[in-house]
Length: 604
Image (cartoon, rainbow, N blue to C red; front, side, top):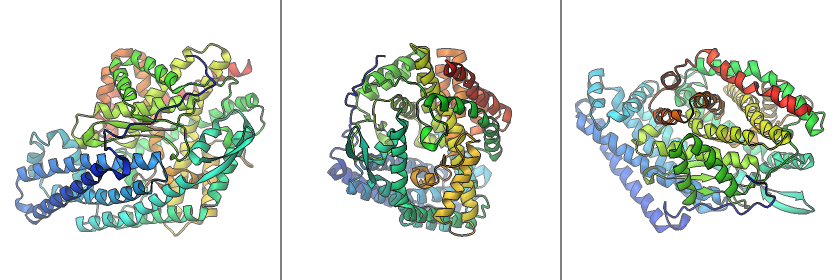
C-alpha cells in the first residue's frame, strides 16, 4: 500500500434500491401507509386472540408469530431508510419527521410484541411446549422462550402497552431533540490560513491530528459548542433517565442495570468479572502514556491527546487503497467474507464522502426484508478512517451471515454485535504491523492498536461509571449540569487510572457531547463496547491459532449470536466461562502485553 497525500473522493452510498427518491419518494410513502394498515390488521387479530386466550388454538398463535416477524422486517426497511436519509443530510427535516412517525409505528409493533408476550406468559408449560414444537416457529424457540420470561418480569400487559405509547412523544422524543441539536451544531475552524464552518462530525476527525494546536482547537470548539447547549442537554438526559426509573419502579426493578443486562443477555457476574479485570490492568497503560508524552513532546497528557498518533509518519490512504488493503487481509482468512465485501463495495453500500451537513459518527444498518446493508461514515484518508471502514464492513458481514434467518434470530445483543466489527479491525491492524516498512511506522501502528485498548479500558469504563453514578443520584431527583460535569470528572479520574493530567486533562462536558448517553433504544450504551472488544479478542486469538480453518466456525458463532444467551454462546464456541475472571484476564493481559514492544520502539 503506497502513501498518498491527496485523498481521492470517497463514494456516496446508493439508497435507490431501497426506495427511489429519498424522503419525498412516493413509493416510500405508500410503503409506510401499507405498513400502517398491516399493523392495524395485525392489532385487530391480537385483540381477538387476547379475548379467547384460554381457547386459542396453537395454529392461530403460530400464524400471529409469523405475521409479527413479517411486520418487523417491513418496519426495519422503512425505519432504517429514514435513519440513512437523516444521517446523510442533517437538514433533511422531512427525514426527521418520518423518523418520528416510524417511532410511533415501532411503538405499535412493540405493543404487538407485548401482546404476544402476554399470550405466552399465561400458557402452561405443556401448551407452550406444543406451540414451540411447531416446525414454523421452532427456529425461533429461543426468542419465544425469552419473551415469555421477560413478560413475567414486567407489569400487566395493559400498563406495558401504555408505557410504549407514552415513549413515542416523551422518551424517544427527547432523543430526537438531542440528535437534531447535535446535527445542527457547527463551528468555525481555523486551519491553513482560513476559517471554515464544519460540523461536529468533521470536528471529531481533527482530534487525531499530529498538530497539538489543531487538536486543542478542536477540543475547545467542541467544548464551546456544547457549553451553549448544556441546559438543554441536561434537561434531555434527566428526562430520559427519569422516565426509565419511573418505569423500573413500577416493574419493581430496583437496579438501573437490570434492563441493560436483560437486553445484553448477560449475567451481572460476567459484567463484574470483566470490569474487575479491566480495572486490574488499566494502570499498566501509565507506562504507555508516559512514553507517548515523550514522543509527542508534551509533559501533561490531556483529553485531546488521546487520539494523537505517536509516530511521525502519517500515511494517507485513498478510499480505494483502504478498501483493497481490507479485502486482502479478509481474503486470507475467509474468501467467502471477502467476496461479500467486494459485492458491498461495488454496489456502493458505503456513504463515505467527506462533506458538511452529514451527521457525526459511523454505523452500519440493515433493511429487513430487502436483505441488504448500508454503511455510514466520513472518510478523510487517515488510518483511523480505514479502521472505521473495516469495522463497519464487519457489521455488514454479520448481517449477511444472518440474512436468511428468521427475523427474530437476528436480534443479537449489542455486545455480540461488536464481534465481527472488532475482529475485522484486528485483522487489518496486525497485517499493517507485519507490512510496516520502518520502526517508526511500526511504532505508529502499534500505537493505534494500544489506543484501541486504552479507549475500551478507560474511556468506555468512564462512561459506565458515569451512568452508574448518575442513575443512582437521579433516583433522588434531577441532577444539575454542574453536578453532571462533576460526576463525569470523577468517573474519568477513576477509569483513566492516572493517565490523564489531574488538573486540566479531563472532559467534564463529555456526557453532553456523546450521543450514546442519549440513546433511548439502549440504556447503558457503553459496557457492550468493552465486552465486544474483549470477546472479539478472544475469538481472534482462536482464529490466529487455527487460521483459515476457523472461518467456518467463526461464521457459525455469528449465526448463533441471535439465538443464545451470552454465557451459553461463549461456552459452546470457546469452551469458556465468562463469569470467571480468569477468562477475562487472559485477554486483558494480551492487550497490555503489547506495551513493552511499544516502549522499546519509543526508546529508539
